[in-house]
Length: 539
Ligand SMILES: Cc1cc2nc3c(=O)[nH]c(=O)nc-3n(C[C@H](O)[C@H](O)[C@H](O)COP(=O)(O)OP(=O)(O)OC[C@H]3O[C@@H](n4cnc5c(N)ncnc54)[C@H](O)[C@@H]3O)c2cc1C
Image (cartoon, rainbow, N blue to C red; front, side, top):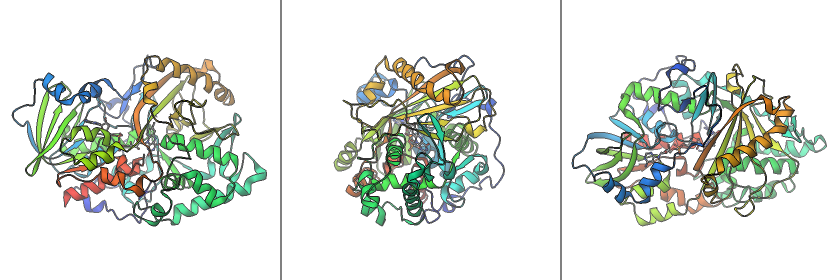
C-alpha cells in the first residue's frame, strides 16, 4: 500500500463494518453554524483576517509536560489512586490515524485523547466568513471507490462532495505566467518528448507496480534516492521537471530529491498522474465528518480534545493510561487495548516499558517542520487550477541549515477552489515544507512570525500581479506553524526496517497507528495503519 489506495490492497474495510454505515446517503452541506470549539475547522471572528502569532502546533503545554514527565505529574498532584473509567480501547492522538481508528472501533467503549484543543492533527482548517480553507493537509488522491479510502468517503456520504482535478490540467507558474499542461511540456514545447516520456513512465508505474511496503518495488528502489532513480531510469531529465520534482519533494515530504527514498517518492508522484480531490477546508473536512459520526455512534465523550496523555503502561492483561484532561485534572483509565496514534518520538516518551531496541529505532526516525501561509483576499476570483508549483527555470540546490535557500514557498493551493470560489474572500494557500533538519528552532524564534509574514507578502506580490490583483487586494494573512509535522521518507529507512521496528505492538496491548508507521506523510497511510490496528483489535 502507498499513497494511492489501490483495489488490490489486502485490507478489507467490510470486515470492520459491524456497525451499519450511513450507506450512500448524501452528506450534509458544509455546516458553518455548527462548528464547536474542538472541531478540526476553526471558525474565525470577522476581525481575525490577520494572524499576530502562528496557529498550528501549540508547543507550550506539551513542552512543559514532556520535558520532565514525572516532575509534571508530581506538580499536578501525583497519579490518581483510582481509575476514572474502564474502557475497551484508548486512542492517543486525534489526527487522521487516531480518528480513523476511533471510527472503525466506534462500536466499542472507546476514548480518543487528543492533546490539542482541536481534533484533526495536521489536517486542520479555518473558516473565515464563508471561506473555508486548509491550514495543513489539503487534498487526497482519488481512490478506487471500493478501496478502503473510497469506502470511507462513501460511508461518510462525501464521495461526491470533493472537487476533482485531473493531471491533464496540471498548471505551473513559470516565470510568473500560468503555464499548462505542464506534463505535456508547456514550459518548453521543443522538449515535449522528454516530458511525455517521464509522465508516461510514472503513470505506468502507478498503474502496474506493487506498492506494498514488503513488495518488489520497495525492495528494489527504497535504498535509492529519487535523483538516483531518475538518472538510472531516464538518463537526462529536463531541468523544468527536475525543478518541479525538487519543489514537490519539499512540499510533500519536507525533503530534497537527493535524500528521499525513490520508492516513497514514486508512491506519491505516480499517484498524482491520476486525479486529485479537494474538499472545503482540505482534509479537515473528512476529519470533521469522521468526528461527527464517531460522536453520534460512540457518544460525545468518545472524542476528548485538550487531553494530553502523560504515561501508558501495561499491568497484567490491561493498560493504564494517565492523562491530564482539558480542565488540567489528572485522570487514569484502565483499558484492554491502547492505540498510540501520536508521533513515535512522543510515544517513546510516554511508554516507560518500551523495549530498548524499539526506542532506539524511534530515535533514528527523522521529522521535519512546515510553515503554511493563507492569504485572504478582498475578492472572489476564479483560479487557474487547484495547485500551482512556482518554477523559475533553475533547479534549486538542496538546502541545509547553513544554506537555507531563497524560496519562501514552493506551491500555491487555491484554498477556496473546492468551494468553486463561491466566497467573498478567495484564499491562496502558500506551502513551505522546510527540507532540512533543525528548522523548528527558526520557527520558534519569537521574531519568526513577523519575519515570515513579511517575506510571504513580498514574494506573493508578483503572483498577485499575474492574477490581476495587487497588494491592495490582500485582506490579511494567517500563518500556521507545524513543528515536527512530517516524518521524513529518507532513502533506505524501509529497507533497514526502522519504521517497522518502531511500530511493533507491545505485549499485544499497545499498538501503533500513525503516518510515521511507514514514514509516509499522507492521509492514505494514516488511514491504512488505522485499519490494520482496528482489524487486529477486532480479532
Ligand atoms: C502543511 C501540511 C500539508 C499536508 N498536506 C497533505 C495533503 O495535502 N494530503 C495528505 O494526504 N497529507 C498531507 N499532509 C500529511 C498529513 O500529516 C497526513 O495526511 C495526516 O494528517 C497525518 O495524520 P496522523 O494522524 O498520522 O498524524 P498527526 O496529524 O500528526 O496526528 C497526531 C496527533 O497526536 C496528537 N498527540 C501527540 N502527542 C499526544 C499526547 N501525548 N496526548 C494526546 N495527543 C497527542 C497530536 O497533537 C496530533 O493531533 C500534510 C501535512 C502538513 C503538515
